[in-house]
Image 1 (cartoon, rainbow, N blue to C red):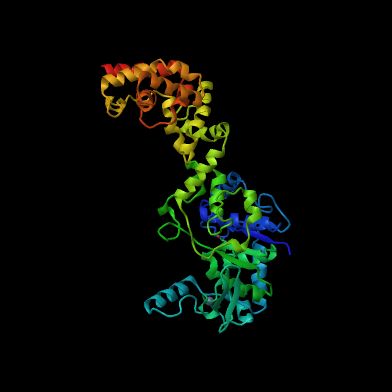
Image 2 (cartoon, rainbow, N blue to C red):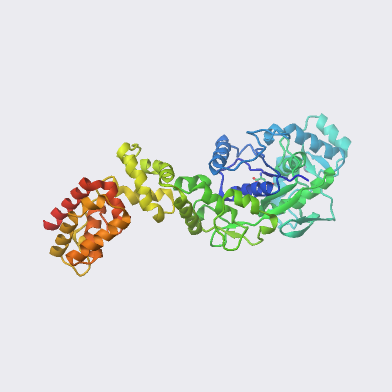
Length: 492
Ligand code: GLU
Ligand code: ZN
């Protein structure tokens, strides 16, 4: 059997981490089984539909870099892959159930249903929802009212007094008393649009879906779906409900916890490789002791028995760690290309929005080597290297003075450094280290004491990216200017 699975988002919001996890698991499962992964747009909720969300869906996956092999944008043998283009199919199938006596027309007005709901709320009724008022209408009564121009909905006739069972690939056997399912849910609305349940089941069947991997919040809908498959006379796909994604407080991951849309993560400077790697671990584990996986490695390792039943906890810190790892794997040039837009936006090269000139561009690329080990998202980069582009504000004099030293000694130390800058510019890190050690010995001072005033003079702070690299990027002239400015301040 060829495995076919799908991601079936409703374009009613930005793509978020939970949706992407569902899509990724479906992708990985299909890849691992040499099957097909489909995209289907479930866009029948027209009140919440927005074309911008469809665009966001495409942008998100283009950026993440994994795709479906069949979908609205690339076609395929079982299209169209957009539900609003398949209305005729749903109508036909709802009609077929009516003809089999498995569904029926309901002519109840909104006013009647509203009154019913109010009454149930008032009396704290044990059974809520539709009261199956029209379930007993005969086909001829229905036909007559249809002919008279009434616009009914079609409801599923749930077989009462039975229990529905299915085996979830992760959760095992699931049982649901039919009487506890929402009473006779609507399949087709009076405007001819299907509900989620009808469209989802009809499409999974017609599209040959063998496996439904979806978030656990859909589990309560599944007994209803299984009943529909039975009433249609179809086999149902294998269901596998994925563990929930929680915040660290154990509540469902939401905006309260931090970024949730891929757009936000992307803007903050997370890399797609890191997000994919981290999201692939939300509810699954692969190899003991291995954290970093490429998409290819995940494809070959994924299987349903690697899934865990326990909810996955989304840990922003851990994601940051993964992102840092992937930042470190980039060459300076590749990282510079990714980080440049953040530098431009942060006004590193003039006003915000100003592009770098050639010299600034070179400095920016060179600076990547200095900060690679020190950042976890791209957005942190500009502030870490701003001092390379604009003279940093002069810190108070006390910042220059090493521990147990005084101002005159600090002036001496910085004066010694002034003569070391030019030779330093030409040296590699290892050479520079040996050179400074030697010079410190000659001057009878500690290396740390020698470096501290120099660091503050050049970078404006006691803690900064590596100093030798800084000197190579700033160059002798600019370094000397900063030292002189500092000396003037210390001597004032
Ligand atoms: N349209 C549903 C959603 O937004 C699909 C759920 C399912 O996979 O069946 O998630
Ligand atoms: Zn009714």
